[in-house]
Length: 289
Ligand code: CP
Ligand code: NVA
Image (cartoon, rainbow, N blue to C red; front, side, top):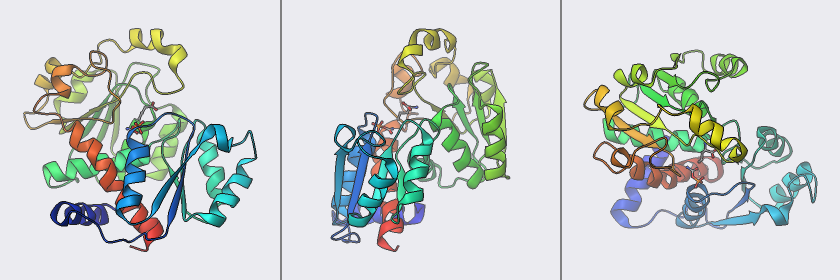
């Protein structure tokens, strides 16, 4: 998928368009949570590949409320060529996949955000010219984005360090799942962001308050104080270390304005790469690449 993404990105940049690999095809998209990047990148990816990205509002679809999930899955699969969904509960994605005969793509759940992780690796590979052997340090909440990055790092030979406050590391069941899913994953947990930054080639952070956790906001902001990715932290990292953030970012909380906008930020190329990775993904899943 990464290879196809790179090829399609190069094609777009050099010729201004892509081959219509998905002509006449439709990707149905359901969002239970807000989105900018995921929604736009999938819609534009479908357009640029000659197909259509159809956004269905959760209020209309009523996934699991207006009608059972297994019925939604079967009906969409009978008309569309792929389904992309962003849900709260992860088992909704799994159930959609169980009842759909077309590919179901995870556009973020409470558990994971695999499309983000792959766009991140595309960005890292473009910058460093390689993936294997690079150490990624995730500073902050052991959340959906962190979990998917850990899996991706395991798959591509990248040591992964998670620096989080006690209680916000990967829980035991996650550790077990990660180890069985990615036996080669070199994973280290720490509560010290400075320790994590010191040997990092890539430093990643994300919001301290994910969608659905708004009620815990005040407590979380308190707990995560000291975990900001700022100039002081970056000064401890190797000179070549670069910074990622999936966005939306909260400047002055998990990341400082100076780091986000500074010369070591890959955040906006990373956001653009959501588009390029989605294309590789759907070209493989729905376009026979
Ligand atoms: N990074 C990301 O998934 O952004 P959106 O929530 O805007 O889709
Ligand atoms: N962890 C964040 C990612 C947003 C793209 C969330 O789930 O809200």
